[in-house]
Image 1: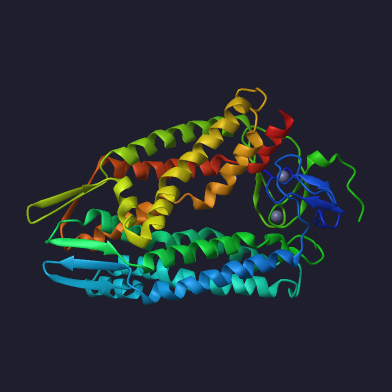
Image 2 (image 1 turned 120 degrees about the vertical axis):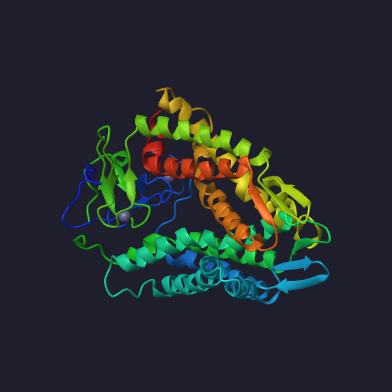
Length: 216
Length: 207
Ligand SMILES: [Zn+2]
Ligand SMILES: [Zn+2]
């Protein structure tokens, strides 16, 4: 926005809290002397920028991956219409939407349930593996990637909500009824675990190298 | 490198990249972003507090409507069935999927509501220029932690997909709760745009 004016001091060389011998609170931004344990403003635990938190990132990542497998193998939905009954997996639901020429909705479900989760596994693994291996400090593309992962992960829940709404709504006795399948639960857990994995990643690690002149 | 010669409470460390900034008081319509990574750090104070409170109140009222009014009604071959948001969440309540139905209820109703309440609790005295109420820091921390787990907007997109899926099977009519939910999403997005974590934390500390 044009009227925005940065009034923060913007020196030629960006100094990080770590370089200045300070610890910044990741929750509220307050700065404390190095070695302070808890933030006096918001009560968050202060931790210096270190790779120790990566273990939690990997633990949640693995849990998410493990639950993602049954989520794709077991049915999401069981539909019963006038005597016939069918079961649909996540991919099966997309195929059916395409068969009914609902390409837009098929695309939304395909992206939310298949593309985003898989891309997210790769993105988190890539970010975690590349910590400490940046060729230069201050990697903007990595930060963008992290922001996208943080923002987009929750949207995978769409299919779980679709199953919930359909199962609640389509209860017309013998005419048509829809029931949730076991994949709904494992898919929801998989999404929750990958969200926790992304939250455990400390974005300050992306910038851990020596601070440099700010990018143009 | 030497510690900058300013009091520590006038410094902000960017939560995303750890860059240090020296903060000065902002004018009515000014905001400030991190010089290195662009994360929004500071937005104007009183104006944004009042906006956030008003929007959080609106959102809570809309949430009541969204939960208790009929959400969707389906009809086919003379049969019809109405469903509220509460029933949609309870769809998983049979068998081993029961915890999932609790989780759905949490992320679409309980967590957003709790978050609005915590924000109002934190900001109400601050916007009126009074000292923050007890446990304001804890309440605001809760509001911050709940943010990624409040999924009302995702629920509405899920509804749209579900509507397309049943289109061939039966006809569906939208109830007032559906529109309340849509309004809720717009209000929530506006509220998030007016919020600056750092400004609120600083106000809690200084009050
Ligand atoms: Zn803090
Ligand atoms: Zn930054």
